[in-house]
Amino acid sequence: MPKYLLFVIALFWTGIVAYFCLVESSEIPTINIPDLDKCVHTFFHFVFTLVWFLFLRKQLQRNNVIRPLFYSFLLSLFFGVGIEFMQQLYTTTRAGDFLDFIANAIGAILALFTVVFCNRFNVLNSILKN
Image (cartoon, rainbow, N blue to C red; front, side, top):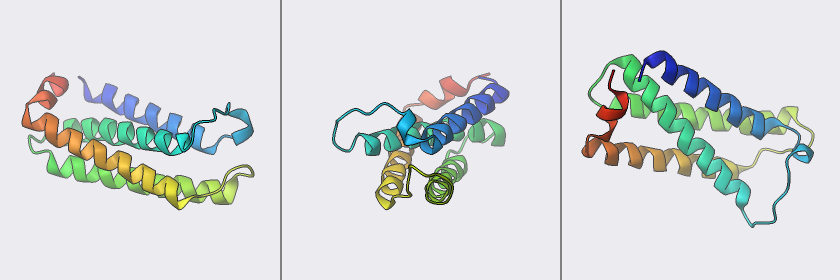
């Protein structure tokens, strides 16, 4: 997959996450499932970490997954912290939540394990080919 396409996908996903985390909560339909928002945060950061990892791996042209995985993991954590601060400071219907940050970190950690597992079975090479 071309690196510019991976970059566009990563930016698009970043925008989606930022939008849904910062939009007025009254504009989001409510579903009465306990802790659903924590699951959404976990999913958002799982995908966030994966797409940024794929781009960084292609961008850095490395066979080793450690550096791009480390960078994408840190990017996910810092982005999550930034979103929580923005919710606290710049929105009226949302508030920063430490448990949201924990859910973000869990998503990033799950992505980390997924990459390590996929790398072990050479799945990443077939995705990044070209």
